[in-house]
Length: 96
Image (cartoon, rainbow, N blue to C red):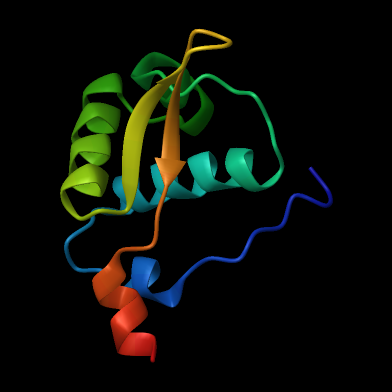
């Protein structure tokens, strides 16, 4: 997996609102996004890729959405579920 580096927001790592599992899910989804990998982001697929239980992945995705770190959508062209990562506005405002 050489060359698959991504920049990780310090705010994500420091977030007390997110569990380590949620942070791991965000990292996997963001890496796919940055490197244009067309992986499916279904909870089952994310659980397989991360080694987490599927129920943990569901909770992590809910945490990420609630904290505005991601949105879930369906890629109409490919029919795959995707997680689009975000940087919450409140973290951008603090950085200014």
